[in-house]
Length: 148
Image (cartoon, rainbow, N blue to C red; front, side):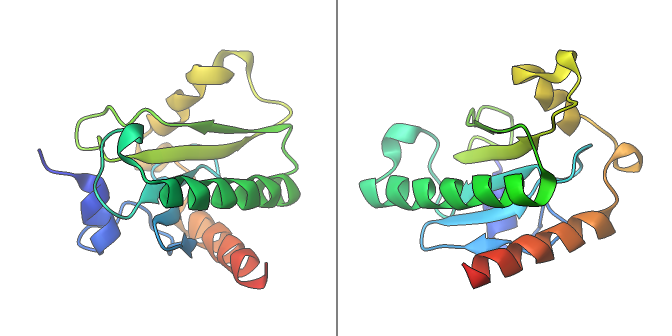
């Protein structure tokens, strides 16, 4: 099966219109697209693996450090009530391990709380956050990582 995460990681066919926010030793951070909410980030393993039990201790360690920094950045930049993190890696073309992380606003609709939030990823480009806003947010977070 064709892996769209691997294609995006290699630069062959990027998923996000924005730049990579952070490139660690094992993980990349970028913005999901198309999506209805600015700040929906994806932490993608650089190598191809399809299950959490395949990750090394070093990969888990770096992941934890990235999640800690991102949760703080999302809170500070978007004034969210809490941050959501999930990992399923079960969709066609997206079995590659990746974590979704986004800021849940204080006024989040009840029907989107929890797993319902994934409805925000099921949008057409014309209903999504405009690419230029995603690019600007990616640049902002990229600078935050560089300064931290």
